[in-house]
Length: 625
Figure 1: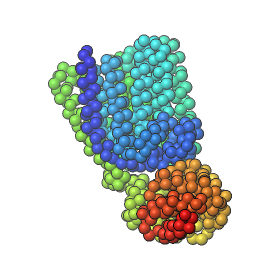
Figure 2 (figure 1 turned 30 degrees about the vertical axis):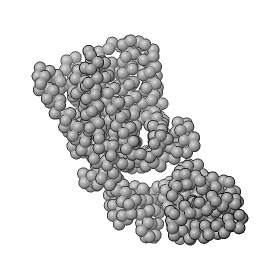
Figure 3 (figure 1 turned 90 degrees about the vertical axis):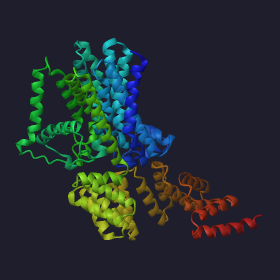
């Protein structure tokens, strides 16, 4: 086969994919992107990369996926915060996975590789994984996942040790990108069966290291879920009957979205599981009977449908509801959980469609083209939903009005725009739908505080703490209000409680430092400001206030260093310019002090302190000349 015949189909896949995902480049940051990328302390602090791998902090979102987190760390150190660049990386990773899939299908002589890879490239159910920056872990783990399968099957043919080692390392990388790839060893078995490979004792022994990696990753993931992420919440508890009913229903939901991807919703309605209703178990029964029928027909037409169904369910296993996942507090199913499980379904469907139309070449390719065109258009349209939090959450509410998470998130987005009345209305609606989730009360209390409704704010923050006494943010926000109300000791105690819950909470360290500074406890204030900037080196106000505390201790060099750090991250901070001018003046560096006072006044012409300081410093400079 000529090189052009090999490259041209791959190039056409790339062009189609880039057209479908062009709107993604213009999308912004949405849910969890701030925690994963913008406000993840380890992205910027000294030694952050080391800690990502060997000492991850109590970030409330991350599991132990250091390769995915490292990809964000690299971005932050190359181009900083740039939504378009981050989206471009996600699209590139998806394209990489698609090309690996395409060439892998060709390598192992699977019919219709272009069409099947095109489904992977353009199917709208994948849009959420590609366009949502936080879900990079799907496309990144998918690249390693597909390369691992290719390497292992190549080893199965050539018995070269380097292919086996490569497969094992690639599997480790997939697990360190996202642990839901733990079922890959079973997929390797199913791939061998699909290719008609014979089995010997050594074939089973060679899979043992893969299963060991899976077990280690599974226990690590469960530990992180339980200790860092919140999978032990009471509303996640389900008995065995509920788990069986849920596990039967979930595969049918995804099959429906794969074959009829409409409507696609960012957060789907959460089903009610009633174990007293026999119909709740019908999906599990149908799935079992279907598998038995295919097993009975394994030697004739049932082989590939059975293996495709098995690969689909096996890959879905981590999100079938048998294990507690924090996301299941909000939804039982999500498009981004179908990224890898959908592949065997698309593969089986593509093969089946090709067989049905194998004697009708023009009809086959016309249908293939029509399906891919429809998928591409739907993906292009769905990408527009992710343009901004406002658009995303309004679209979700329109399709799922009972989604309390979307109401709460839209409330927070509106709050950041200063639209407090609208924000509070959505926070209240979220609580009406789900009064048992502490963060909804926290969000409403915070918005009410901004509106000046102190008593109501305290009531909702207290309710958040009644539901979950270990909500560090509620303790911090309550402490802030208590300080404002003159209850300094009680406020300090609230900050200390927040830090006992989460010692890496930079804002609580900063707030506590402020409270201690007003009490004249300089050493303690300096300690907490220092902790705040250790956790978050880009915390401008903490650098500034730490400089003020050090200035009071007459530690001029350290104070100047922190004022300069504040200005490094925010060059237009008038207070930091003014404070740096004061520190330089004390060292008789009048020219530098005057420059910073003038810069402070350029930024804020009404700054009275900078006006006075500039006047006094000009006099001192004249006297010392």
